[in-house]
Amino acid sequence: MMARSIHIEAIQQKDRYLHSELLSKDELEEAMNLCVKQVEANLDYFKEKFPYSCTKQGQYPIIENIEWTDGFWTGMLWLCYEYTKDEKYRDLAMKNVASFSNRVKKRIELDHHDLGFLYSLSCVSAYKITGSELAKEAALLAADKLMERWQEKGEFLQAWGPKDSPEHYRFIIDCMMNIPLLYWASDISKNPRYAEVASLHFKTSCQYVIREDASAFHTFYMDYETGGPSHGATRQGYSDSSAWARGQAWGIYGIPLNVRYTHNMDHIPYFKGMLHYFLNRLPKDDVCYWDLIFTDGSNQSKDSSAAAIAVCGILEMLPFLKNDPDAQVYEHAGAVILRSLMQNYANKEIKPGQAILEHGVYSWHSGKGVDEGNIWGDYYYMEAIYRQLKQWNSYW
Image 1 (cartoon, rainbow, N blue to C red):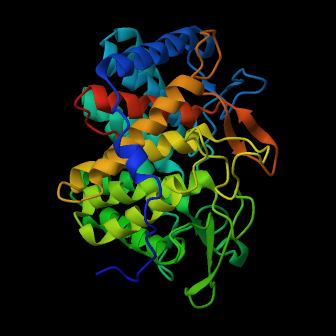
Image 2 (cartoon, rainbow, N blue to C red):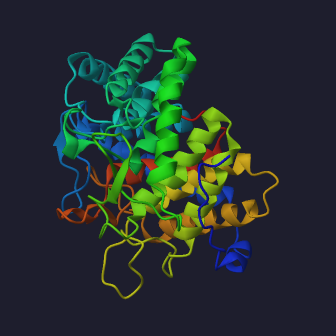
């Protein structure tokens, strides 16, 4: 049973979605080929280093392997390799894997929960595609590092900060995307503890970070003394009470990933509630503003990356909804959003160092990456396209 009930809104534009065309193979191939051209242009630009999380004036700065976002670039290399079978993408991806192995062994900038974003897309993918033992070892070490964030009292993986710090006693909705690394580690190692922690964190997230109206907090604080719930807040959304678009999308994708591993269908209503809330707040062109509180005429920035993440979530959940009357609506809604990204947000001018998907927002409050490309937007856009073209063995 669900731990609690949430409100599931009726989809306001159901008929419009159902009367829209699904994406054709030609549309998908044209978009994917454009993605591959941009990645190819970026090979010599980044070489064995990595793109910064977001562009600055349209160009990615080049960094070492130190950010929480570096795995997205390697994931894009693996998608290109699987799509084209061109060894140049595999060769650079495996050099990245060696870098990620070094990073986890030396514990470089890993005192946070984003081990899944880093190692699922770089090393779990490499192991699935190539059988690399180095990649397998690095990913298992990353799972061990993520387990260090576990707070038994409260049953959650702490996002950041010292574990004995009351002010850091919190988790964020993004972590739904990190815990698949732990499920994978249980499958590979035959140690059930990884999956137990992942499942418990997921249940805690559904219980507290998703509001009764099916919107989501970005951050949820637990009581340091008791381990019980304290309060929700934001570090990324417009306000503590608004719905940060990317956070909503993390839930839309994170829930079906957890369903895939746990086979627990009782969580599907959370997905439906979060997705309906998201769809009902899309603007005219079907690509969300950076916070769902904003609508057309607000003069705020869109977040194309949140839209791409949500499409991936829809595609992930569809196989579990064979007999659901809304499944066809979801499929068509995903196509409507993705087509808008293809037509209005994809970068058509291929130049080294540029993003694939434009008009994203990293952090509005800090002014970082506002109306810029970001590397996770590039990745999820590519994933959403690729998984409709090929039979895809998920990296997550």
